[in-house]
Image 1 (spheres, rainbow, N blue to C red):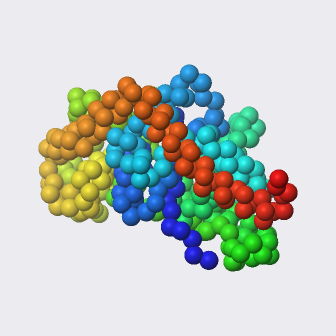
Image 2: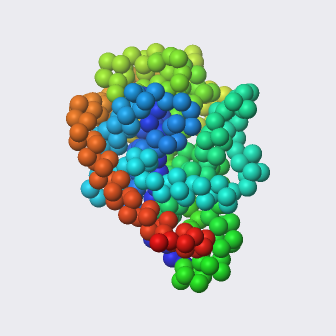
Image 3: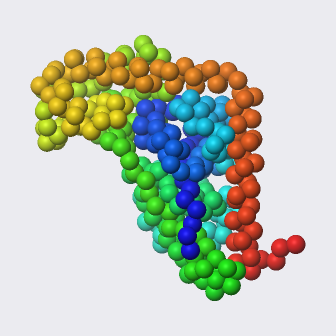
Length: 344
């Protein structure tokens, strides 16, 4: 059957949104709203797979919401909400816990990375996190998901779960007029020249809020002076910039800064090298400072302004949650019928 084209994605409220979040996710969210119906979620239930401070979590949830708004997502035309306010996410996740296979979850590399050597002490939630992610997407029967490279494996699991549910309950699905599939096979949307932004201090590591050095990242709330200082202090190498992409091989810091410039300017990296090839990093960094301040400065200022009005942010989340719940409830009602649950 034909599914309504719908985009779903989420961002964890774990504090300190940075340039990697912006270029890897949020800027794509803004672009997609021009062509798709979009649902953007602050995934606070995912956040608690590791312990969160109950005092800090509300602030972090509002900060992600403020960043969505500051970057240009329209909460009237699209849906912005926080996951915990739509109970159907957890309800469908339990169904998917019973559909997904243990072997599938054992192959998830991100659990191994996050749990580290002490896996026996990791939360069960962290282990079954991908099933909740599948529920996040499929409770809206979303057809497209903007994801970074590190989430592709989880999206593939979502597709496997959707397929197995459709196969397991094929007769019941057909009997209720849904054709040969109730859930779509969500497709990944990986766009742009900088889907993976690396640390400013180490070009081999992903930019992360957990890095102890604040100079490793540009936070979305950084002012112009902080942005300029971090770019100027970013690690480089002694050679001039190359004129062709091949010259960036084995130069991870150079490749990262070129990728950031290209993504902020929305041009291919080859154009950046064509403009700056042969230049020293001091010249290139000055241009990157100007570009980053022009692009990110207004977003940081607007994020801070919105954070000063928590009542407005909460009203956006409440409205989005109500609209999301209407869609999710329809899906969950049909799922219960398909499975054979008695509903009163």
